Length: 152
Image (cartoon, rainbow, N blue to C red; front, side):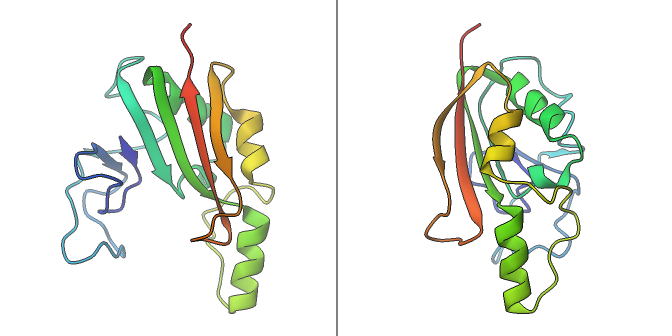
């Protein structure tokens, strides 16, 4: 599952969820991949508990008011051993990057303190962090975060 893929999924075989059926304003190369599911990423109503091998999302989680509830929902659909893979902005670093570049920051971001630690603190207890990195070489204001769902 690639949540908020914007027409360019992490891998071609990913099931893709976005809130729009098309990709308005998105730049996904010559051809945008299809949106398989259209809806709210905070409610994965299409899935029973424990059915997905992975949930990947890039720069989406920071747009929700209730980060903890969204993480619970994303982890709910993972099978034991399944992986939550996130690529997210450190808000303070991102805001500084935008200021230095003379550009407006994304106004959809909900939390001034959003960071790697922010996500760690809101992760459900049945998830174990297996990788995190900040900053990353290819994006100075974002972090990588991978957690694995533990058996009940």
